[in-house]
Length: 181
Ligand SMILES: Nc1nc2c(ncn2[C@@H]2O[C@H](COP(=O)(O)OP(=O)(O)OP(=O)(O)O)[C@@H](O)[C@H]2O)c(=O)[nH]1
Ligand SMILES: [Zn+2]
Figure 1: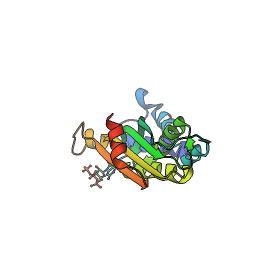
Figure 2 (figure 1 turned 180 degrees about the vertical axis):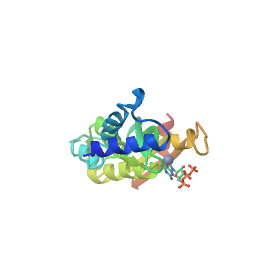
Figure 3 (figure 1 turned 90 degrees about the vertical axis):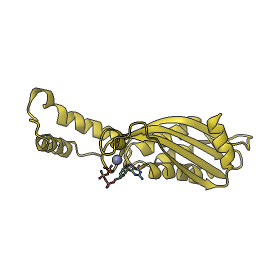
Figure 4 (figure 1 turned 135 degrees about the vertical axis):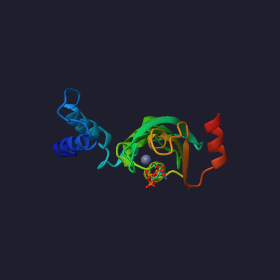
């Protein structure tokens, strides 16, 4: 749970610190808006998104399952600016145990609703699928653009960071091939 009153106070302080008048017309509702916005952006802080994977089915399959191009937006913990992109998840089921496809997207969404760094987001998704689904192997790739590299600092719009995490035994070449398909 976020402390809405504390956020509102902090935003008033921030507005004053950057030379704005928090009581001017356009800003009067901003602290409350920002507090509501942070309640949403950080709503996953105390969640365990891996719980979505407790929904599983037994299916007669031994093939690799991939859900790619899962859109996400999150906030970088270094600058409190967004980074956003797409996550691709592949796993090799064990004993025919699969999960609902939407549940993989829910895992990505859950770990995105908190302050993040891209490497940790990638690892958390891989660990959740590996541990909860008891998958034989898991491959996760995350591609993202960081606003802290785009709108400030080094200012390199279009630079894409790619991170991967592999768990267990999985054919990395097949995973990468299917991402390109
Ligand atoms: N590895 C990693 N680095 C990140 C991520 N998000 C932001 N960063 C980097 O975190 C670093 C923080 O570096 P600092 O030198 O402490 O901060 P800074 O002075 O604002 O750095 P610049 O961005 O280079 O201006 C920067 O290089 C960012 O690009 C992420 O998800 N993963
Ligand atoms: Zn950053």
